[in-house]
View 1 (cartoon, helix red, strand yellow):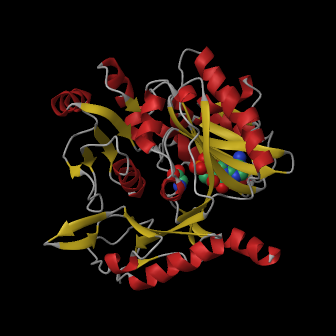
View 2 (cartoon, protein in one colour):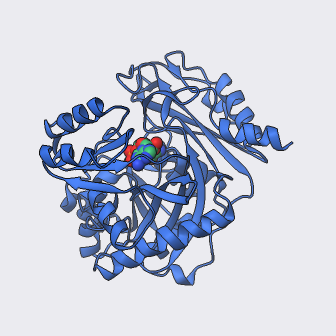
View 3 (cartoon, rainbow, N blue to C red):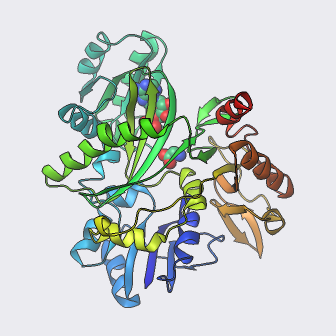
Length: 426
Ligand code: AMP
Ligand code: GLY
């Protein structure tokens, strides 16, 4: 079968690598892809032009489209493909509101009694300022729409909260800030859980833990994620069961009952509070870089899993198997990331780093004058697998020390929470 993969990041490279391992995969096209995706033919196709994507699928006899990032989902690309009869992995625009509108998700949680922070949703400054009275400090202020991971402010004082509210309604987040959600601040360790669903059946995949801050020790500005590991043992089997029963199941059932069944991967961002796991937010796609560690561990056929999701047949396939090992990925970013990453820096020695159990996924890379260079904020994802998080961490940093990328940097402590626990347990 021919496959079209939409996207260009490390997440898409990991998906491409795993899709290509399937005996069901013939030709893979990546739009636009990146230089790491040697398994695919990179094509230039404007994913906002749905007619062009449909025409390409007809022309190349595409049997599965995999949509990596959130923007084309929220923009309804999956809907256009479904209308044209092309199997697609990814939710409809309506269902993707789970990621595209924080207010939509909070209202759904309220209706379905899903554990999450208490909230107020408002579309005006006066309403927002009044709502602040009902929350203790710190308080969380969120732009409703997609804001590339930057639309969340944790205000440590009333003055900061008021400034954040005014900022959002002043348009500092564009249309994303036309509505605002004000939320109770929750305390606990964060973890993510991934599952695929075809709108009815839920197939749990695995847990992971991301590292969002740019600096060691979780300091500095938020990023798209500087590294991750999977599984996240802090999410015990008992807690995973609660996440499925108390969060995922009511979400999928409510969307189904509302006539917008969710088809694709559900990424639940969770916080483990004293009262149990609570939902921070949903994403309608795989996490980046969490996808890289999930794909490293996945032993089952990804094409079969995605096609069964797309065709509503998840009830009929074997439960996907994940390696009983820890995978850990470290993001190598360009100096200046996240504010102003430096482009054009040379990268070499990747092949030498890819020893047994190591895979280097490309994110923001490009070929210039025949040489590999940095072309974005997050550039490489150095991914390792071992029997423990500590072992995977050691292997990943050994590989990083082999890679030559003088204008790049990485965090040196990815996995630290679990490494600390493993040290205490031994
Ligand atoms: P998001 O962009 O929704 O992933 O939020 C970014 C980060 O803000 C999350 O990973 C949490 O660390 C933090 N956060 C968001 N909402 C809350 C909340 N209600 N309580 C505590 N922390 C939060
Ligand atoms: N790594 C966080 C995200 O993909 O949203």
